[in-house]
Length: 402
Image (cartoon, rainbow, N blue to C red; front, side):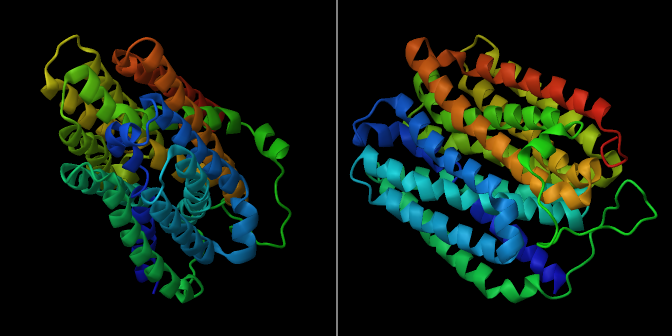
């Protein structure tokens, strides 16, 4: 039963990745049909990410009351409904209204599943969990690209992904009994290795936000999440537009090639899972950032060759692959299993703050100056991420991290 539950959790993470890359791949066509500037992609994604911030901050309370399984199923259903709302939106204002449930559906399920796997599974399974997010994120741009070829039908692309979400929702609701059967004990122990591991229950007091922020290393981890998701969100959202405007690639081709970034993340997380238990979380982060920086430098090279840009996107994806799962997986050991759900919820919120504000800010910079600033913008966040993760390793000394 427990192995079957893991399969269901992986499927839920596919559903989490499916909507994430749709706007970026469709926006070169969408903004024209909706009669808004290209920079308005940032407005839509800001609303979506704002919803995820709210639901992430409330995730601890929701999961304590309703359980991780029900929260996950309801969240995926909410996202599916929002996708259909997008497909029928006659203008940008209506699109923004549907962006609210679009975002609310993502935050709680992200926090719930990340904490569940961090508590009960090894680093290998955490990397593979996020690998399945990459499967969803890589499939949806390909689906959208196929619909864009047919008279720029981005609405059909959203509906197709919406139907996939409905199918996954049905699976999740049918799997609810599995979350109550054969529930394993957490795999991690508190600071005192001889003491029994303490599970968080609804009866235990919740940590307040000030209490969380006062814990050593938490603020550093939050800045690292902010920087990582700023980089990942900007890369995914503006890859197609960068290829079209700076490299002269056709919109439908750019939509398909932009999925290379998410394919890089997916492949990278699969192979990271193979070595994760041997290397450890911090070593995975270091290797990932090194590869990420190489990919950014490939984009920065002052040449027109489209091939180098495409290779750079893949390399950035490969570098991104282990970073997010490794930091999440170390959370129960870094801050205590009994605190991990609350802290992971705040980490998700910090991550989505980066996703909310930094990609739109690049849209403003691209409209004001040039979209050619794209790789420089990514480099800034890559360097912040490097500094914060190294500092975190000095602040928090646990065997799961070092």
